[in-house]
Image (cartoon, rainbow, N blue to C red; front, side):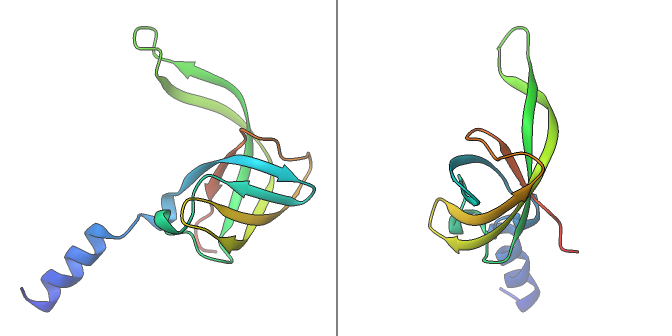
Length: 108
């Protein structure tokens, strides 16, 4: 396989690190744990927007959630990584809560 082909294969297999979504799984003061980690491509220093889910919009037949209305409540900066979780320091207008959505911010 040519070098260009190898690069394309690596890019295809690598996690889409700029589109990582997770949920808050634990809150202790300013320390917040989210449900994505090294397997998802999260790195120390990554920044996440934390949003409260105001309501979910389900498919009327399957009941699967199609979309959700959210309200941004704060920011999370990742300080520790585990395989399937990440720990960070939270700052925001409202306290983070278990179940809040976390979306990785694009590099600024």
